[in-house]
Amino acid sequence: MEIIVVFFLVLCFVIAIIAEALINFNSPIIARKARIVRKNKDEGMQDGSGHRTHWGYIVVFEFSNGQRKKFKVNSWQYFKLKKGTTGVLHSQGSWYKGFDEV
Image 1 (cartoon, one colour):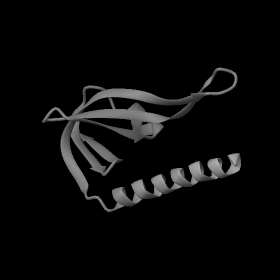
Image 2 (cartoon, rainbow, N blue to C red):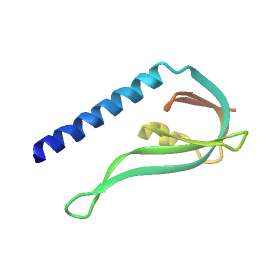
Image 3 (cartoon, one colour):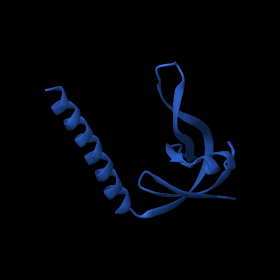
């Protein structure tokens, strides 16, 4: 019974990833003016020894209408982007595509 539950959860996870990728792939690439308002390391769960496993980097952008949206970025982009910088954000659905400083 436990194996069926685990299999079902893994299957749901895989389907969710594929569905998000399809939605993003079919979304237009949008360029809009934004400001970087926050940067976070997205930390995963603690392992058995109490250490946190690192899963990725998050950058939060704020648009001219006050709306905020967060994007996962790689480590190189995370360290390159500076809080408070204004520029043009390029995104496709929930995918970060780039940021050009103004």
